Length: 477
Image (tube, rainbow, N blue to C red; front, side):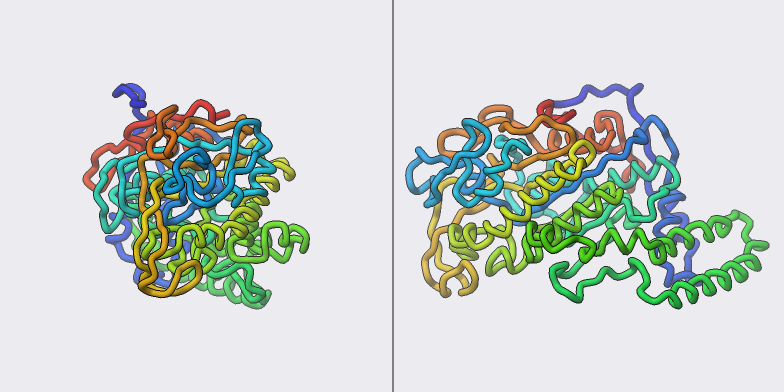
């Protein structure tokens, strides 16, 4: 699905030139003010355009499964395929007639009427870097690269939404709660539009988010005094500031201080505000509490929230990369399925129960699927979901030719599945969708017409935010 070139429809957004000029000036005297610097960089790169992004506020929560999840062992089972393809898991009915999952997803099966399964994703990126870059930025290059050439959709959306002018919400517009960070990033848009990053385990009793809120009121008083002193020093310098570069500094420092001192910012990240029943519902583990935090942030007005389901809950290698050398694929799927099923189903149910389903879109995906045909290789190490080194065990390798993801909320029609794969799960054969379609659909929800937006890259070339693809009709409202 490609868009014909139409020069009259193009809306150009500024590139990084103004930010580079600002950085060349140097901020040696304000090196400690990373947050104000970010706000100022953003403001200097903004070209306000009411046509580019509408003022309606919508949010996206993307749940990322790094390494790639087996579609056959989850949302697209093949019970009639030979044993070397179908795996050991039984199929179960869902709340949607004619749609089956594997037995690993009983909670999601019960609420399948609240989301839509896209079973026909595909692309040509065989490695984790290429697959991730294709899904998150639309880069069509099938080669693995050490860093992204194009900014990911999260950064672009943050950048474009910044064009709406002053943000009244004190919370950051884009937050990564242990979000994906290995093969994606802002590329030529720069770090000013990167996420506010939350790391660590939100399930731990001593968990806290740095740079959000101040526990001691005296700290806020100290910051205000420091800001006043800085303002006085700035006033002396402004007489020599021919370009007026310092005039807006107070505003940006004020925004950064708001992040630290406004009670709303700390409250949004504070899971102790939730009752025990809700926290139990999501699961008292890292993934469950990450997704609960994601819901809280979206409800509080954060536009873009990402959360990556990785770490010890995945198994020995701490991701979904279930090669036989890494994991016994079926033991790994069993090992992580309860936490995954519980956290995702709780998030989706919560979105609907709290009346967020029109404005908050939830997308759950990884960079690709896993090989339909099972293979056996010796384990390279013993651990959770992996036999002792040298023991042959089953695995599934990378498979970009067919995989599934799920979509909920966003005002879309739910309780159905889109597309299909062949009888072995090897190829998408109906309603085939690529990364461009995936990205265009997310942009559409955020009010961004991806067919009309170009952003200048490092060389000043206008670059489309989606090179090829259009919103998936069944997934837009």
